[in-house]
Length: 205
Image (tube, rainbow, N blue to C red; front, top):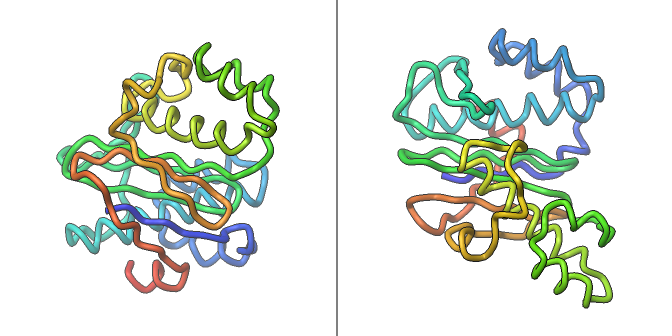
């Protein structure tokens, strides 16, 4: 299932206070290492989304702990058979949960300078973007798709995103929302996203 939480930029530090009792010690430490309030809000929100999803889909209650692979890919410490992926941008969060390998990435829709593209585009993609009057929309979609594949691959930010092209991202689906693009991979095929609210999340956990 793919879950989305929109407009997190409208949440305040009061949300963090309400979220604290539902976070694991591991997640609390992660929050403590973040400086910006917006990062803390999204870090807490996306974790609560996972909690709500695990309870809804598998009846799993409590605060999940993570273990991390070599390049930082997380998995559930007590449920290796359940796969998940988390992502957040400035104003939205995404969480996907599956019985098979899965990944999600969400990015703000914003203006992107062409020179940035050379760090994640193939030569062909860069040439196409360079021919556009404003390549921002194309580049945000590409970035989201490539980030999704790199997370599925397990290397995350350690991967060379230029190597992920349409040939190997064809099973990644991208949807647009309120100020964002979200790309996901699911062995179940196309998913209908579930739009959550903060109140709904807290009620479910």
